[in-house]
Length: 155
Image (cartoon, rainbow, N blue to C red; front, side, top):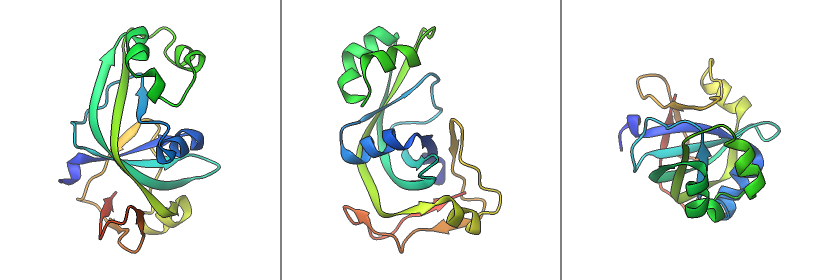
């Protein structure tokens, strides 16, 4: 996997917890991400968690009018129909990122620690591509469920 195939997204803690708990396998977006299936999606949970919790592999992106996307994937979004409709109000197209191979860190990587390693790190509002051309942040000392030997996150 190349660095271009890794992104970081920010989620509210409840949505991140639902992904790692297995009740949410589809992340919703109002705009299409410029990524391809197979991309590794690192998941940052916003305040009060303020930490990277793990990652998932992008299986595919589904795009459809909101009502059609709900019929197809609604039960996998981890939210109610009312929340879904409120989120996509006024949108003609809804995007569902279908996630697979979810890996949760046993110990979250907190924002303060990330900033010790990468001075100018700011969690993305939408998403950001991770680029190996800058300083690398090694996470090999972290354990995952299921365990993965080594990985790196690039900033």
